[in-house]
Amino acid sequence: MAIFGKLFTIIALLSLVAFANPTGYSYIHYALNYDWAVNTESGFMALLGGVLLCIILFFFWSSWRTTEFVGKFIFVIVLALATFIAYTMQVFSSQNSTAWFVIAVLYLFFFWGMFYPRLKYSMFKTRTVDDADTE
Image (cartoon, rainbow, N blue to C red; front, side, top):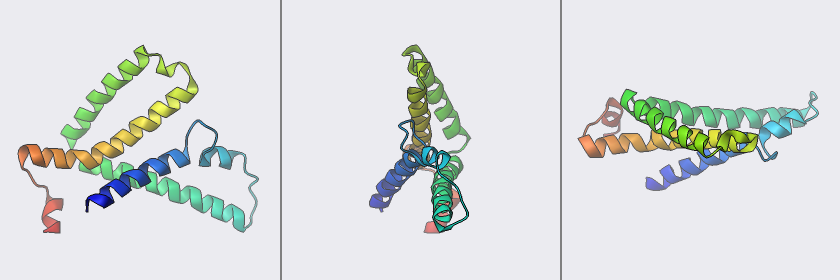
């Protein structure tokens, strides 16, 4: 089962970077410059954007659901510290580095959502209602 967790992290990262990134080679950049018309190619283009957005929203919702209040609180504290460090290193001085910082924060939230339940269980040996369904 560990292979699926690694596969899901790769899918989350690739879909997030493919949907929006500052390099100019993303779905958002392509869609803004695309000549939209009512035809099959435009339908597939819209479907691709919808699928990418659904994948991103799925991972965000999954991470939001699995991290309880304490997990979200810890993530916000770490995010505030990372934002302060990034600000002192002048990461926000350019638009590209700011966009990469936002992508990294979202990806780390996805990763934290997958990691937090395991960490909580290993530290406190607690189970949730979702764990009882799989037994």
